[in-house]
Length: 140
Image (cartoon, rainbow, N blue to C red; front, side, top):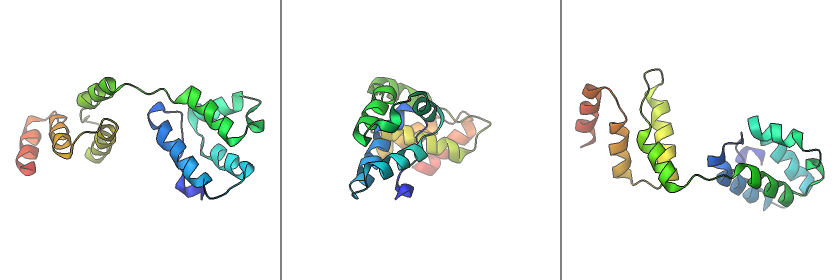
């Protein structure tokens, strides 16, 4: 069951999806103790640090624990901010194209970019003009 839930590092952008994974697994009739164990095993980084800073977390129900996590970590950026960040994301010389592609697609999913529009944004994010031209030809 725990493999169905990803790790949560405190990144506000993915809190909602992570909580949905928790709630889906919870429907399998796991008791609170087992669910809290799974949740705690999936916390990383800032979220794990937060958990250990709260002495009462162990006593909270799963619902209350999720409410507290949501209060702290579900700080959603508005669509305009997300779209701006998505448009500004460029392929960096030190990263692989696959990493850039994954990051750009993930960001595009957050702002509901159509597939055609996504292709254009992917190409626009390539700073090398000859590679950009080649990518435009390939995508047509």
